[in-house]
Every structure is written in structure tokens, then in C-alpha cells.
Image (cartoon, rainbow, N blue to C red; front, side):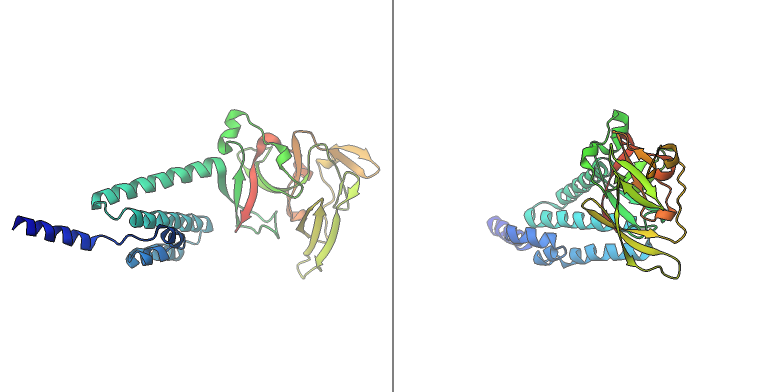
Length: 296
């Protein structure tokens, strides 16, 4: 009698076990969340991981927070799906325990990533229009040990920068404020200006009008700096008096500055609406926080 009861108990337990999935297929479908949950017969979890981002979309308009929610829910969903597929035999408490550890591990990785490797930056103004509109976000790739560089006295390796790179840095005159600008001149370059146009090492940067001046007086121009091409925004009323440039040496090209070996010269893409190196000087290597790698 006891043997019969034990057999029935084992049979009932086996009936409640999830079928063993094909591991390679589970991994692929887990990445394509929620299809992994459908493959495991866990449609309710698939719907849950679809519902949470939709709920966040309804209750917040902050793009930075939305991106954090979407990425977090996606990664947690992938981990959860793989966990169910590879560990179906664990008891309920063990499942919650593993789930908690997975969440804490993700939280730790997220914090380390933000502090050391990547971070978000919100553009509060229009100085980088049209490429980076006001209130848009970028993902900034930090360098070295990221946030901790300033405490360790580390300097950015300027050899990693190219003409046209967009960088985030501490404003030299007030390091508590972060700026975003485009690198126009590198160490030891000579830079001057004629009617607002850039003269780099004795050569005027090539420009090409993309859109004629519109009703607002804005003109889009493609500027070429070495192998880098990008759009800049101009207006007929060009700003040609630059306080910092006028402190440099007087030459046949006008006032010409030589960038120090440990600094870069930066400018905003919205040329008449940008406070940049033309007005307050160079960006030292130790002020550079990172480089833009993605915008949204």
C-alpha cells in the first residue's frame, strides 16, 4: 500500500515538472523575449514582461527613465526565462531566492556600468542642434575608470580622439557643470576664424550648403573635418567676435591659436548659439568625461 502511494506521488510530481527544452533553442527564444516563455508554456510571464514596459510608457514621458525600464525589464526577463528553462526542478523558495540574487546581480552590474563604463547625458540646450536636439539623450562611453578618474588624477588619452568626435566634459570655468561639444582641433593644431568659418592649420574646413536659409533664418551646412563629416547650423547674423580667440597671436589669417598638447578645442554644431572654446578656451584632458556613442 505504501509502495503504491509513493509511486502515485512520484507520478504526480513528474506530471508537474516542466519538459526539458532544447537548450540552444531556449537561448535563442529567451533573447527574443517573450517567445522564450511561450516555448516553455509560461505565457503569463511573457505577457507580464510585455505589460510592464507598456505601463511605464503610460506613466512617464522621461526618455531616460523609459530606456532604463525597458532595458532592465528585458534583461531580467531573459534571465528569468533561462532560469525556468534550465532549473525547472527547484522548489518554490529556491526559485525566489535565485530570482532575488539575479536581481541584485543585475543592480550591481547596472551601477558599475553607469559609474565606470557608460552613462546617460541629457542635452539641456540647443547648442548641438541639429544633430543633437534640445532634451535629447546620449549614451556616453566613459574612459579609464570613469567617474573615479578625477579622484585618481588620471587624464584622458587624447590619442583616442578624432576630429568630429562629440565629447562630454566638465566645463573648465565651473567643473560642476557638464558640457557636450564637438572636437574641432586636437593638440598642437593651429586654429583661426574668418567670418565665422574655421581655418585649421592654414586650411579652411570644407563646407557645403545642404538646405537653403529657411523662414527662421537657419541654414544647414555640411562641414568636413579630415575624415569626419557632420551638419552644422548657421544663421545670417554670424557671431565673429570671439573673446578667447582675440587673446591669441595675430597673423595674416587674423587671430590664430595653437592648441596645447594636453587639451582640445571644441565647438557646438549650432554655431551662433553655442558657448564653446571660441569664448572660454580649451578643454584640458583631465576634464573629459567620455565620448558620445549613441543618441536617442
